[in-house]
Length: 294
Image: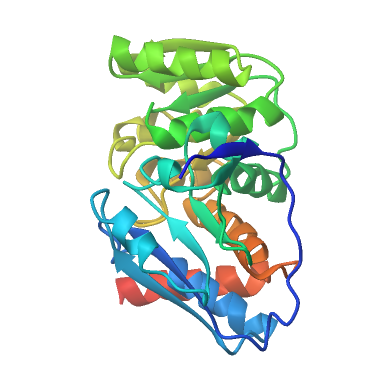
């Protein structure tokens, strides 16, 4: 089905609590996902006893068939890698936010059967930063250049007043980040990964890399004058970089903070009920992580 960019708008549902509705998170691999714990906690707090939320291992080759098999009881889907771009041609409309980074992490099924693609990662990042008191910074640094890095740039378009420095491993990645900056209206300067320790003096540092990638920078965290570190990882937590940052008195935003805020927005969009119960969702996420470590 063709898709079009739509203006952001959300309409509350009627009879939400009484109807049997389904939702799920899709991706591959998916066993690690905390989304079921977060969404189920929200349903319990909101009194949505007839709602269920599951997880399914679905890759790019299986997403079209999965969508085709869904019936009218489905309210929405959460999507993780590798589906955030693969799903776009299968949707009727996508939001402006999702279109800005060519990534959909949320599908909402409307009453008329239309499939709407949303992106809650970007507003989730902004909300997580604001929760920690970060409203505006003069400059920022991004570690990494993958899909999460482009979402970070989209969030920084609303948070950062000046230049963003992206630390990357190759010239191809550098060109990609500069391209995203031009598209999103963010002035981006690129620098080599070998110099990434310089990023730690920025007012806001967003680490978007896989587990272990930034461990080598932990000893280089400055002893004073720290800004805020936003490390998008949540398991294992804290990362070596986040632990060093906290030990030196710096403010840290975690991947769990991001996950909770983006999931809360998904709950609101799928159920039509606001506000989502952030505290209960965070507590459920923390409990699930503790259980993994036990």
